[in-house]
Length: 112
Image (cartoon, rainbow, N blue to C red; front, top):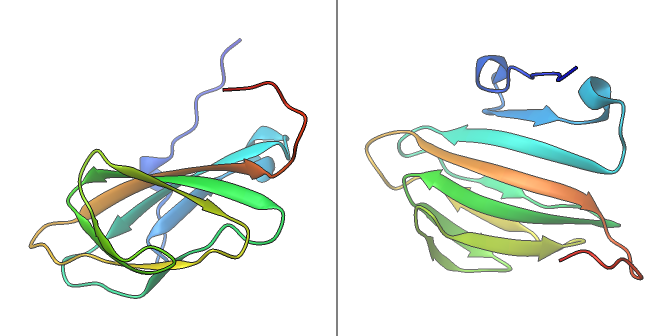
């Protein structure tokens, strides 16, 4: 049986929803769906010690500062490891949406 998760419908005041162990029962990976309102700034993107994340801009562009500085355009992604922090801003006039996939850092895995 396939389990479907309502990600879009669960965004709270923080502007993000984390689909992780509380939903899936797995501590191996997680997914974050985020929305930045027009002009919103200062959203921290930081995997934290022992984690890695790939951040993908879905709609709108994200102005980044911190570990990476510049514009993350719709359809582009960045890779963050550990304490590498970025701060995202939505310079546009419409909501900017992004997805973050993350998991534990480690070596010895043969995945690509």
